[in-house]
Image (cartoon, rainbow, N blue to C red):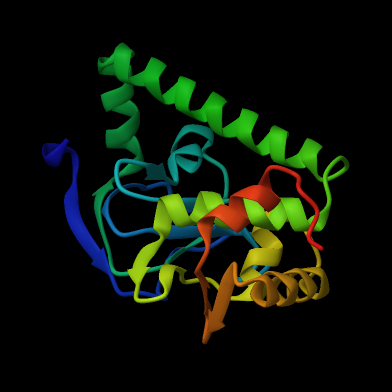
Length: 203
């Protein structure tokens, strides 16, 4: 893979590419995490990490980018020009099939989350989102596991209002499940959070 492009680095908070751009390069994340956003930098639709690609649909579809990607932390990625990426896929059918399976899994996950919006409440959706984020981008903190996203970003990611996130976080904090800091939430009791994620009502 190294021969396909060159390694590039992005500082935390920087934009890797923006919605509407006509660029078609693909980035293979090697270190760090990125957030994929629509509408604004705080409306997150997905988080990607090491071993995952971003930008591949622009290379395949030859259309303007449909989302923006920002570095959540310091990111190191392999930059692959779009035409080189496509040639690589054509020459390696097994990689293309793996990519298709991966894209299919992403679509299924997005469909599942969309379906959940009409079935489960804000508490359970937020708890599930925090459990998933803790596993993916959580970092150790003296009080537990830190998720470096603010409440507006969480609202966009799990599909609830900013006000609902604030109310749920307040109740979770009162239960001792989470603590809050500047631009971050610390999970202090994973058992309580997992219970809420499983559908148990916050009392």
